Image (cartoon, rainbow, N blue to C red):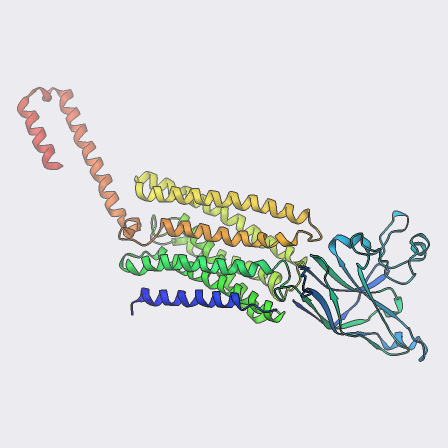
Length: 507
């Protein structure tokens, strides 16, 4: 069996697995609480239970379910109450849709907003002092949902029986466990909640990405098939640069496939194992790093204008290692163990190093590309010059599109602080994968393996120098002829014939 046939079979198997897995998706993400401490916020103590986009389903398959929820207070807090007292502490569970966020809490006299009912708010709004302020939603009086759980006597623990809250409309839902009792300071929460969407455990913002990665994987399969057919067909003429392109294509296919299977696992189980997600983001960081180094190397004329990177090799490698570490840290922070639809603030801290490195890379790439174009123009290498001009145009379009999208992303997030446009949020991250694929396709088109691949290689410089030498030689002949004419030798017909014969011999 030939190498190209084996590769074809390999990619067909991957495509089949993707198609079968897409059909076999099962039924919400599971939020687990392991003695999570309540933190003090104003006059209240709370734990954030999660935030996810949930799509309404007419058959009742969209809900939030509480399982084995346990609240544990300190022994000192329990001993403050008599043994036979029925209610010796109150914990309230609040669920609200993002559009109803102003229906939780109040503000006396227009001052600082308070979650718990204070004496002033009790007079103004008629709420019950020591409890969460709840204002019925304009669209549904039953929302926001508030569940009360009471401690009894001197018991240190209290439990919420398994409860299911049906979702009545599509929206971004937030869950908080809140206590307004100062004696419950230091309380912890254990148990879990199950958030269900109609199609599975994936949060609403992430769900479209699973189908997106199927499409991206199939797109990479098509690119791989086309590239590897050419790669195997002209294996004797393959350049070193084309070996690196092959590695980047393979990593892209591997990354997109792993992302799909990671999301499919999340959708089926409701959990994101740290090991699986770490592998996925590591492959992605390697692919991003090699792609940027490939573009930089091409811009520096690697394999075309120069046989190696020479003294720049160590600098390029150092930049690659630094970029990989920055990308790896960012991706681990953003994806590993993340099941909410809202990213943590820690992500912002890790975005800056990668953004600065990208800006430095862009500057270096275009500076190197400008020098390479100047060298090719000086050598009058029209074929290579045409390729590099197309490459520079593609890079310029990519940078302009990237800057425009960054501006849109900043605007999108700045104008949607509560993630009410969560159904379109997946497009933000998907755009970068699409842009990377399109640029890779351009590189594959410009440097595709062919019979004439060696024409673009550095070794062909010898022929170009011969052409330049021949041009200079012809110029010397013309100067000799001009000298003879100036001295009057050109009037002799025999001398003219000798000149023509001599010129013919030299040419």
